[in-house]
Length: 152
Image (tube, rainbow, N blue to C red):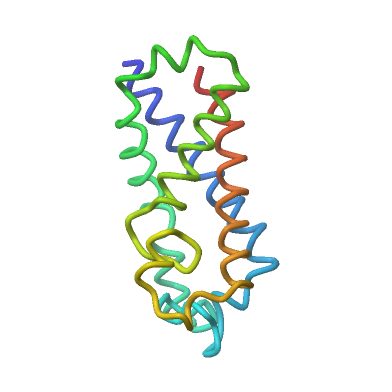
């Protein structure tokens, strides 16, 4: 039962953190997600109603699935996480999210390691990379603090 509760709370914290980070970052990175001249033009264009509707429809279900999957991987170390100090736990969980879900992710994106290796130079622009990096940093901080506090 404790694993189910952990996964439910983890998923909730992930979804809220990810949504908040996206909302904050969108204020400075709207140019990445809308219009024909955007850097990451291989993603759905949020200025196109049909494409935006698709994202709106699937955003929450996708985050719920991601949250559950990420929480299950932590089951073997829940005891250890519960025994360490809040600051260390928050840094660990935030760092884990930042590194595993972004920086060292196996999917190429303009601001991660794989992107630097595999993406064409037109996609790797300093301004876009900084904006994407900022979004995931915000997510990781919010997630790390909230998860470190509420899950243990």
